[in-house]
Length: 119
Image (cartoon, rainbow, N blue to C red; front, side, top):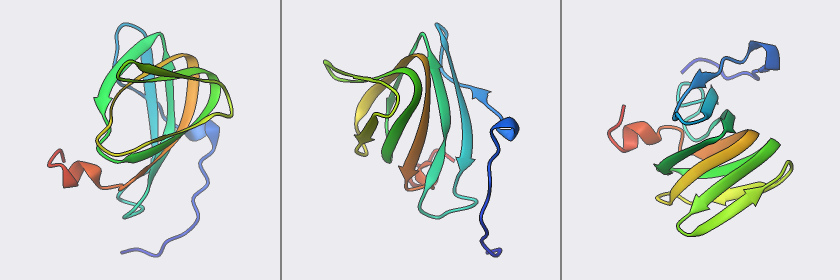
């Protein structure tokens, strides 16, 4: 494995790709993945007028940076504002929703796709 070093991600250099929707839009900039870390994944995601259904296949922490982010778990909706933090345990069925929301996320393990046969 190559020598590890600190990586600085400049906002202006982040590339966001569309995922989920329509309706609405969602984008993601995957920053840290299994090619860099065996344990951690991280990135930035945006959600606006969308509802993305998913079962998390990893433990995830979300920090709301901008807008209103909602996490729907069953019949419960967690409405989050900037500065709020959410912890989601592995195998939780959820919906990511938001209005002009931008979030930072971190997840473990980074190689969840391989572990679940999705890579």
